Image (cartoon, rainbow over all chains, first blue to last red; front, top):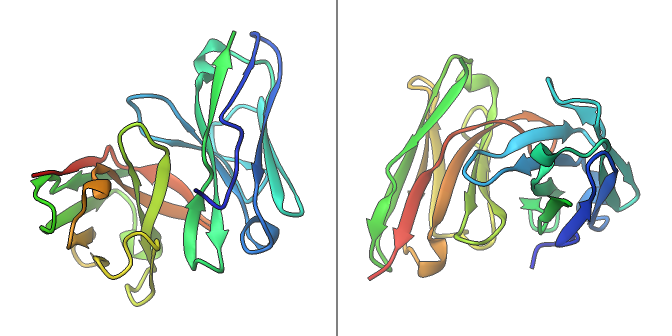
Length: 110
Length: 119
């Protein structure tokens, strides 16, 4: 019951593009920066994007982030089998006065 | 290498207490906000609490407010999460995380320590 809603899963063939949405409100995404994380099973989460659209050090430009109003989007182009993971958006929520994670999206490479 | 190492996890009965620690190394610990994040079995990531550089500004998830307390010792480069009145739903892998960017942009994660609340 997170305040940030993501699709449970997305999938595409290798080389294709997927987009993951993160829907919030003016209490969170509308007024704060969004970051995105990749979490492969058995590993620690990894920062991909911070400040809405800034790629973290070492992250390939296949990963990109954007934000519009109360929603944010992570795009992955040139999909690879190694991209199969769970992806989460994160931001601050001023009503909760707490950080919030999105519900998470599982990316499957067909 | 920048590193965060958690410890203190274990098995505890409902209603009990546990104290998690996180040792930071190879960076200026006092310059960063720090956060605890957890993941319950089969569930997504959940933000738990954070603390500012000086330790005088602390925020908590609604689910742990009044039961958990975050603190830090900058002289010892350590972060702590005191967990009281533990419930079965607190069972999770707990990560210590460094906040490097605005609004919980978290760049360094520890390996995590497991907390199991069960009778």
